Image 1: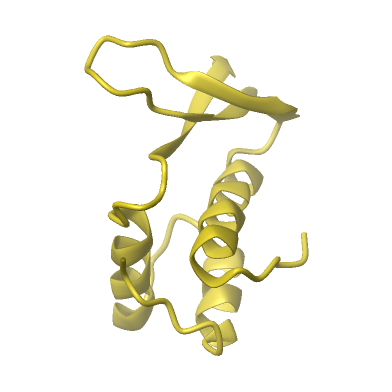
Image 2: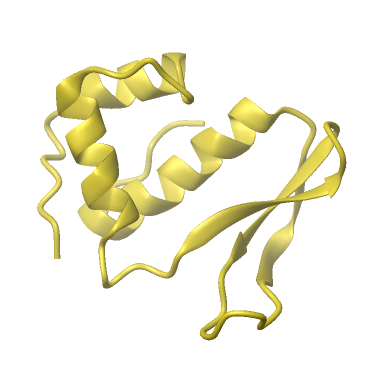
Length: 100
């Protein structure tokens, strides 16, 4: 399991300010570790209305298997949806909740 340093709130702030980049080297390394953590389900975003609404989901096992939607929350901002995925991964890897 990748080790994420929970004291690096500077990287959290950097991501929250610019979820799609550009990102510093330290943040890129942290994101790669978060995205490839074998202990985490593969969280993804599903566009339910093109360019307007997104939902959190996780990939199921095999290719071609339908994704599993998480909760009922719909996002009307793609960047806020990216932040929500980051919060899920952070909580799972550090045990800490991040403020919304």
